[in-house]
Amino acid sequence: MIEINNLVKCYGNKKAVNGISFTVNDDEVLGFLGPNGAGKSTTMNIITGYLSSTSGTVKVNGHDILEEPELAKKDIGYLPELPPLYNDMVVLEYLDFICDLKGIKKSERKEHLARIVSMVKITSVADRLIGNLSKGYKQRVGIAQALVGNPSILILDEPTVGLDPNQIIEIRKLIKTLAKSHSVIISSHILSEIQEIADRVVIINNGKVAAVDTITDLSKRLSGSSRLLLSFKGPLKEVSEKIHGLPGVVDVRTRVSNGDIHELEVTLVTNSVTDLRAGIFFVMSKGGWPILELRSLDPSLEEVFLSITSAV
Amino acid sequence: MYAIFKREFLSFFRSPVGYVAIAIFSFLSGFIFYSQFANGKVNIASEIISLRSFFVVIVPIITMGLFAEDKKRGTEVLYYTAPVNLFSVVAGKFLAACALFGVMFINVFIHMIVTALCGGVIGIGAWGSVIVFFFMAMMFIAIGLFASVITDSQIISAIFSFILILIIQLISTIATYIGSAFTATFSFFGINSEKAASIGDAVTSGINWLDPFAKTSDFRFGVFSVSALLYCLTVSLVFLYITFRILEKKRWSQG
Figure (cartoon, chains in turn orange, green):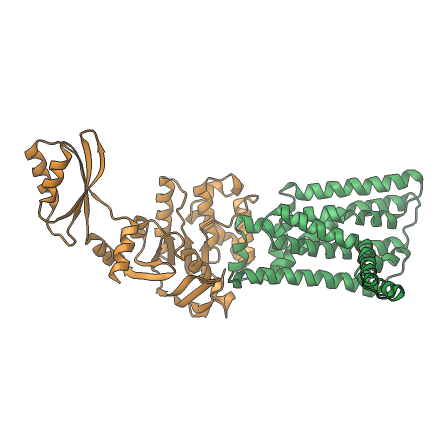
């Protein structure tokens, strides 16, 4: 369990983190969401003891990170944004070095490493040079490094950034397995990723907590406003007017217009219960204008922020 | 500390650094020894003393990456987030570089054995020079480590330690220049020339007091001085401590 209380970190006049407080419960996956530069990495660096806070406290299983750093750090496994790997070392040799650093007894080491290596599935590359591994495997070795010493808390800073889709899915699977026996804090700026993995979400913006919410509550907030994308062949002006006339439509905006093929973005009333797609279909079919595409637009992270910050 | 020592020491041999340093040292020591040997007058003490003037090249090669590389690779996070004391990190890296010097120095021991086998004499002065060599190496390595911790570029670190070591090697020349500059300045402002000269001399000898080479110059004749060794040791510890504080500062930095 981690208790974070009123954390502040100043860089000169700028407050990178400005009064962040939240708790992470045991065996919970907490998503840490925010745009680039919001203070995600800084907060994680403070929790792990890499940086000190200007004021505020971090308690890891009851131990203050600054007052009892060695006890607190034993419970934390950290994977920074850039995995701390030595490219000139072989995987097993590297993990052995991490065991040395974390003070794992020689007698327990072999078994401990064997378990970690099979858990993160790097057995096949265990005796290869880290510098020659693919990015996905490097990330796994980074996670293995965090798992050394059986910490009860894992802190993963953007673990899927820069990976290809297959690797992303694999890493997510791995994190889900790990979440069964660890508390996990995972940061990302990809909303869907957090939605898939996390139980609870902390959203930060400009160094402040904008929202702390469970995934279901967050989705409810998001479903409030919705937009549709309509791509069709036909007269732009007439269709726009007709669709604007439908009940529940707030705004119709032209996105792309290319010859007689047009793309419209239709904004619907917040909390609208009626499904407008059927209505749009009948309007179009009546006019004999073929629909090329009709889909709902996923809310982007920016919109989540807008909706959340305006609601607070 | 042992973990860091082991990793750093072995990493010298995973990259060209260790081999380059050993090759340079072997070449230089071999060359000096051979030229003495060919003349039939081997003096191990003077071989070691000549080798000392190459610290300025060898030390930066060894120390430039010690911290700079960690910063660049992001591996320094490991030291900050593992339950280890940062001073043991500094000490581990320092000892690894010292150990590499030990490996390089095997050359000189081989020369000593060859000399002894050929009926030459390894006097107390030679052993004195060995002691001085290692104490000075420690001092320069500590300085190199300091140069490595202040930047994340190996090149800048190497240049910086090169300059620092060069200043120390040329300190007696520099002292003379600064002393005469003081004399000139004071006589320019109308202080009588005798007084001005004595001020200049005082400045020169003040700076000269810092010269580790002068302090240890009698070791080659078998005259040992504890204070000279203490001086080298103190300078090493001061630079190691500064290095440690700079590492610590990073955590607390608000800049």
